[in-house]
Length: 162
Image (cartoon, rainbow, N blue to C red):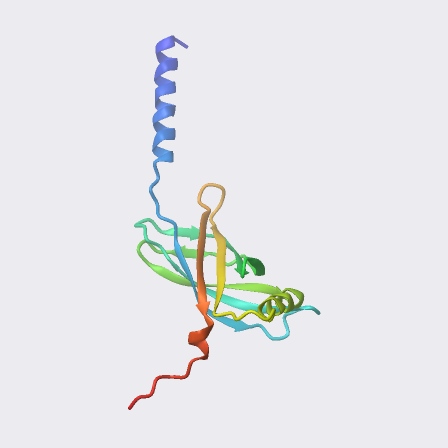
């Protein structure tokens, strides 16, 4: 191969790798749409729940996935995790709801409650959710969200409608 051909091949490879790394896709926005109990699904010291995730795709290209992983942390400690082999497509500039069965250890639950009952008033409970939509080696989409539950608002009575 001549030097010129080698340089042309090298330049073509650089251009291709540059285009591949210039992807400006925004990550999917994921929120918890609902949580349901899965009665009779747990083993011994665990509780099973179905977490329904609302996945919004802020890009014009669809997101195809073949599996989902989810981890929920509450008060900076792992609370639940789960996987699903469910596959599908989140359309470009669209959304879909995906169900992911998760497992919660009863011991983790007791530890979380004991942490809340340490004598200090608790007004807010922080949470963090992370996971991925697995579409293969080159198209895995990771997501994360964090927030807090305001316990004072949950326990307050409804406003008077007079």
